[in-house]
Length: 323
Image 1: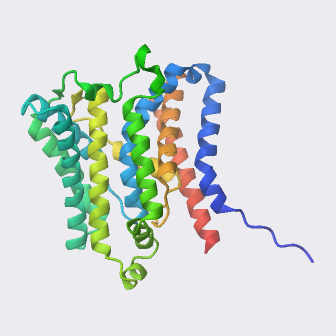
Image 2 (image 1 turned 180 degrees about the vertical axis):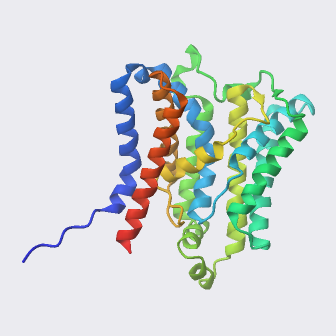
Image 3 (image 1 turned 90 degrees about the vertical axis):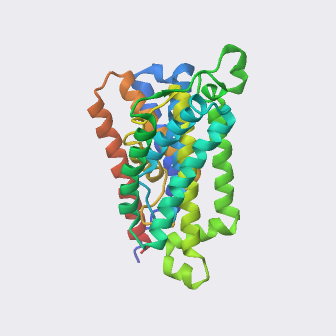
């Protein structure tokens, strides 16, 4: 009797796939140009990754929930403007200004969650509208011009480490990202809220029948996602040293792509915080590798798009075989 062909272990592939992809992409560009292996290049890639990765932490929760948030890029810009405005016009301390930026993002996320749950609106439409509303608010409160934040300790969150602080290995903003990622990953794995998020994403009706407060969980998740995008706005301000109402345009696509490349499923019910961070790093490596090799921007877009399509295709094949 002929043996049945063994099915591919999609669960294992989903876990190691992002890490393997990051390794292969990095090796590919390292062979083409060894400059990407220098400490300066690696530090720059980490700095560029943090802005997308912080927002991707919150987006991971949204996608596991089975939702989507197209307003992330606008909230990032809005958060950076709020922080800069609080310091320059209201003369608040950097810490209080940073808190206001995160709070502004939280408010935007709660606004999305309330509209989605109370009015029973499709997340795609709600957040598409929020994308324009929040971007308009950012431009309105800043008169459509960047606001200089000045030199404070916030500027050092994503600054290149001076010689006396090389012991930190990576800037403070990157350490903050790692700590928050571990906390949210632990929340997903060990708390009732985390289990409810996965349950709703896997089958919302079943979760509702099991007593899960679906609407409340959705509002909480969108609020968390907004807060993380607001924090990402703080990181953008630290990197650019200004609050830019026109910044982070299209970054919501990078954030969503990071989650998808990292193993998140647009069908809901699946995702990984660590995978999303790796997905963000993959995109940064691609962008940096293309720049170092002098490739035009359209090549970078094609390569990044191809990686996203491959990730979605793998996810589709995995679900088809599981069915």
